[in-house]
Length: 177
Image 1 (cartoon, rainbow, N blue to C red):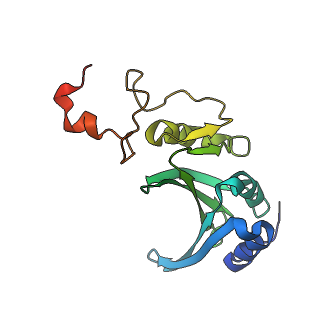
Image 2: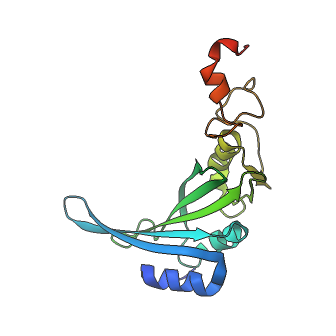
């Protein structure tokens, strides 16, 4: 773990040098927030899905990454997962948000778990499995967490395609309990 606090530009440069073409896009966003007009910095990264696990492990070089949540979107042909981290967490005026985005093909939406690095990712990973139909490889507990046991196995509430709940919602009168 590094004791030196890096700038957002240094972090992006390091990630690009370490992961080369696996980093597809980067953007540094600065916003002034709050009554005291403090600067909040967010780094947006798009990466190849194969590099996710190694990138999360690499974030520990800056400071132990604090995972807020993994959000997910059905983008049509792919499913996007965005891992929302904060590094230098608890260091006022030095915290940096890192949003690490990967896209998974809908025909095989598979990604490795990060619970071996960040055990607290378990709940948010389980949510992505049941709401988007993403298979999290190596997840230590794959039970449902939000949907009832009698909810259909192949229907995913956040999907916008044929695997989504549209038929259930549109023709609710036809759904048998």
